[in-house]
Amino acid sequence: PSPPTAPPPPRTCDAPNYNMAGVLRCNEEPLQGDNSIGVFNDEVNVGSGSRDHIYALYALPEGIPLTLTTCGSIIDTRIYVYDRCPSDPLARMILQNDDVTSGLAQQCGQYASQLDDVVIPFGGKRDYHLVVEGYDAQAEGGYKLQALCPPSPPNPPSPSPS
Image 1 (cartoon, rainbow, N blue to C red):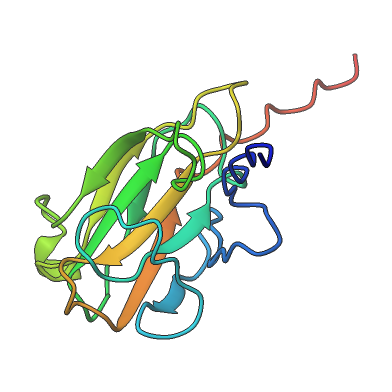
Image 2: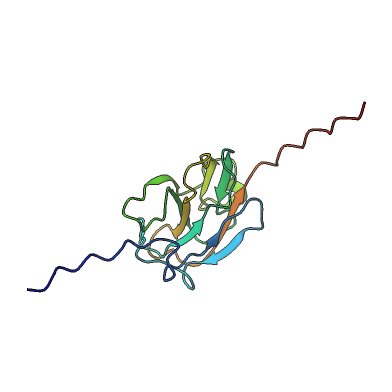
């Protein structure tokens, strides 16, 4: 008889054949995406049946509260934060949002998604990922994604020579 074949290794977000939509950084212009075309991952279906775009969060600062938002999107979005690449069988969804409920709903539109006070832990693994998808299988099209971080504290004044 033939020896049993080993199962394929789990897909990771940094595998060469895996499609990452980008890297999210603080206070840059919103990233423009369109989940009806381009980079997408059907195998990381987190619930709605629409195509998923995955963004790495490793460039965000550790230990400070930040906001992740799809304010200004033209489709109804959902966003999810995972503690590792969402295709990893050990991945855990740690945050999710469907619609903005804060005072920003009027400014952003009722179908924008927003996570406030997201804190990337200090010193842990830096493998957090964000998934953007449409609310349902028909919600495909343009979206905007942005990470809003508080300003850095000012540097203390230099001591004056005595």
